[in-house]
Length: 377
Image 1 (cartoon, rainbow, N blue to C red):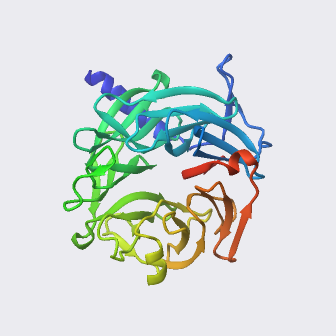
Image 2 (cartoon, one colour):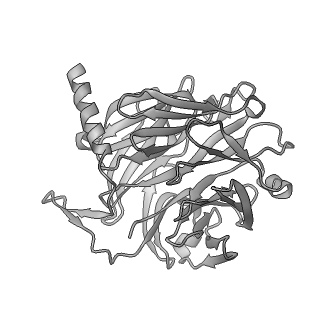
């Protein structure tokens, strides 16, 4: 067993040294891999729902629907495979499935059920070489967090589990051999929150090859009810974090944070009127193409705020009714934002751009979910 573990760690470490590449097409019959021609349209991928059910939605930026793949229940995060035209979608917390879909051939690759005694927590990533699928999970009995590594070459079998050193983990990132995990700090039963008076949200940096905790930073005691939920990392090592407040709705707490290794969390607040409009809830955070500007969605407040990371300051805010899903375009400062009302917007705070984009009737009738991805060129 120890020999198997050492072999796993060597394979994992080797795969993490490989850079992620563009989308490629795989021939299932020949087993070969062929580079994409680069002529395919950029696609937007999100979970979505309507009165008929729950879907994995794929559209292009002209608003045309390419695929509506049925899902067993509402889903949350979507993640692109680095080498194949595959997308993995995770069920909404507390979740019981991950589905991997070939969005080019429009077929399911694998539906992964959750193991007994565990729940999926809505987020996942692929390793750069595409071999490993890594998800956040929790023990159903006590919400203790786990990161779980699955091997695609072994039919997505679990290869390793590591503790996240916290309760209710949500988004995770993989960077240079480390897993960055947002421990929300909330113990739940289904979706009932059980420990709001004793929360301990934290950000954990975990060595993926060993499970060793390299660094952990907690919310300051006066902000212990600020749950760490979503995050994105820029090339300069600045981690941008979106928060959700679990305390008195009448409070006005900072809802964005930054972190640099070896330093405490730096909390940022928008101007008071905007901060209150955010309704103590951020749904998603994404960085622009330059990595210097963050967009933060607050669907309950119908607003998206924009932040300058190097200067750690608020830029401005734009209206987006029930807007949550975010992704960057290739233009610095520019984002696409989706809403639960079947709308899609292009926004750029640097030039005060806010325009609604066309969608065909199939996409416009769907409630787009919390997160969105844009395929590579």
